[in-house]
Length: 366
Image (cartoon, rainbow, N blue to C red; front, side):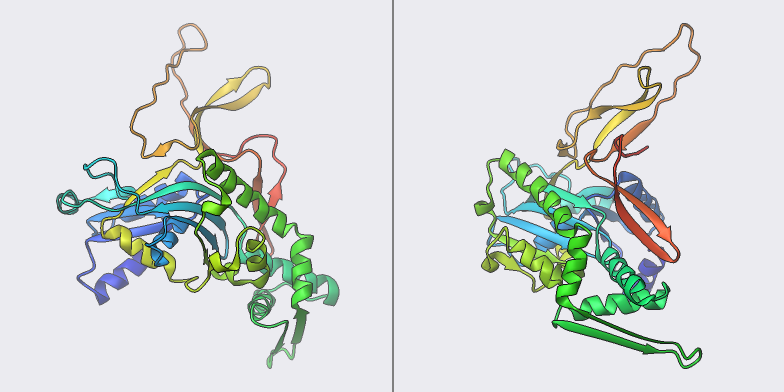
């Protein structure tokens, strides 16, 4: 990232005041913290961060509508975010504009003069599922049916087949290596592709995230009928089977898919111009303790998911020693993921794979 920014500053020397980074909904703070460390070394006055679907809601040009659902489906993640736009701030004082990583004095003085519009995140859900997984499922199909070897080349051919099937009912990819005289011919119909998706419980996993978001919305008095538009973002959102799946929940006239690739960047630019973001914690936070009954470590939640972010009030916790005259204490905080679903990430040869994992304990990032 440092290399990219240095190239931009060389080409456009005036771009040095503000940087907005977008991240997946389900990303852990350890990833955001790493981004913050990278940005601390940059010669940029102000650095902020916000969820990718929230940025997409701002960038789709739907300022005349209030309740938007963003479906951000890219190469590695599937994120849903329900966003309320144009809500008037209740206080005249300026609130933080997204998650502030670095705020220079110059920009603070300028921003304090603004009264920004607001984008409030009402509900969100995410999981590690994306176009890369679909590519691997397609390649596995050809490994089983044609004995195809798993290589970076065949993975690329599977991806190209997937892209073709978004615009036509049948796709074929042919490759001939003049050096080794190897040839590949892969052919697949869209109906076969959709059956592969069903075999991997693809649509059930999408349903799980949609159910989470709609349940969160109902707790705030919102129903499906209150959602005015569904904004499709990311290359995987362009797959016809995904769009058909969305139409099970919403009318075709509500679904917008005209800006799948540029909406996030355009929305991030609006944040840099002084738009207020009100968000909430997607993960909970807890402290590690020794569970005598389980004879092992466990986690005690102290900051629940769903609290407004940034938090206004501190949370205090009193800790005691376990033994008399205990000389030291180990304090480990953790970011606790949703315990109802786990994901394993592993390498299968040259391929990065993800799969659902049955977990007896909550996944935690210390």
